[in-house]
Image 1 (cartoon, one colour):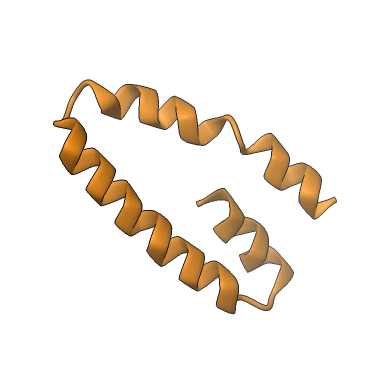
Image 2: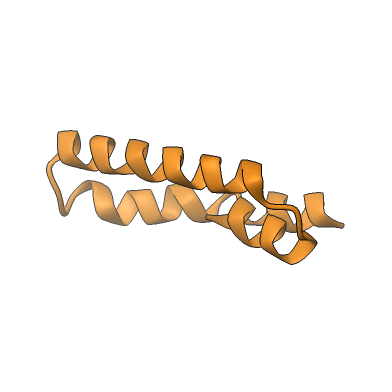
Amino acid sequence: MYSTIIALAAPVGPIIGLFMADKFERKSVIVAMAGAIMVCGLVFSQVSGAALLVTWAWA
């Protein structure tokens, strides 16, 4: 069930990126998103609860 919820969220990231790509300079967007991915990945690796796991998988 958790995998299904996470898989349904997969198209959300590219859609958000589509709208952000033209509004800001590409280099700054790449750097900001790389930092956000790093932080979210570190938090995701430390989560133990099911609800938080699904929430951070969406992030």
